[in-house]
Structure formats: structure tokens, C-alpha cells
Image (cartoon, rainbow, N blue to C red):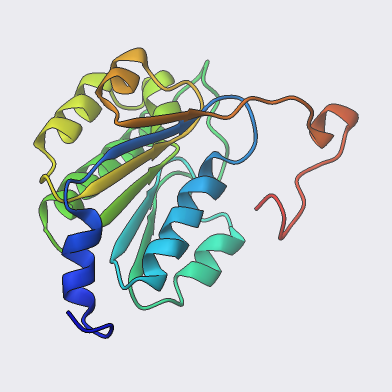
Length: 186
């Protein structure tokens, strides 16, 4: 294999696709997943990122990473934040669209890594079911790495995963009233 042969690197790098979960109440779940995407891109891996419940909000990471030729994004959700006590049918439909796209992308064999951003929250708030995500995991091709992010990861998903990182909040500027900062938090 030559250093320029990225197809050999891709298959060698992924080999057995793992399921990874970044969860917990601390900051850094999406950031960790996007760090994997950036690293993978540097090695010629193809990455698809599907965002649940993020609508058209102008997240900086999407703008930057989508400029790389081997990273693709799809965002689903309404412009407003989801209220877990009053989930609308429109919000559920957006999550179902995201899940359908996830199935299509994962089974396409075109991508080495698929990131399902905030899918754990979507299941916890009943926009989609945990059983649908379990089915997705069990049916994924062996060579695809799958990363699930978001708080509230279901115990059944944690059991299926190969790697689980629980981000624990020790201290956060939000606690003192500091709002999300453009370029740092989104």
C-alpha cells in the first residue's frame, strides 16, 4: 500500500465498524463526534453526519466541515427547540425523516463513519423509538462505524455499543448565566 492509496487506508482503518456513544450532561458530546469526523477526514475516510432536532440553526461546525470533500451533512428538525413535554407531530416527522436517511446512508456502503447527532435525545423524548435505533445498529454493515450523541442514552443502546463515553458536567458557564457563544458553543 502506498501512502496515497486512501481506499486501502479506509478499509484498513475501519475493519470492524464499532458503535460509539457520547452521552451525559456535560459539554462535548457533539464536539467529540465531530473531532472523530475531522480526524477521519484527514485519513481519507468518508463521513456522513445526520443531525436530529437541529433544523436550520447556523452551527459553525457544519459550515466548516461541509467544505471538506469527504464529509456530508443533513440536518433535520424545526427552527425552534423541542419541548419534551409538548412534542409535536411535525417534530416527530422530522425525526422520522432523519432516521430514514440514517438507514439509507448506513446501508449505502458509501461512508466509513455515520454520526447520528442528538439521536439519544430524540429517543428519550419519544420522537423516535429506542427499538428503531436498536434495529438500525443491528442491521448496519460490519465495516461502518456508527456514532450516537446526545444526553439520555438508553441503557439498551449502551449495552449494544462498543465504546461509551459519559460526559460529566463538573462546572459550566451556563450555571452563572453565560449564554451559548457563537464559534465556541455553536
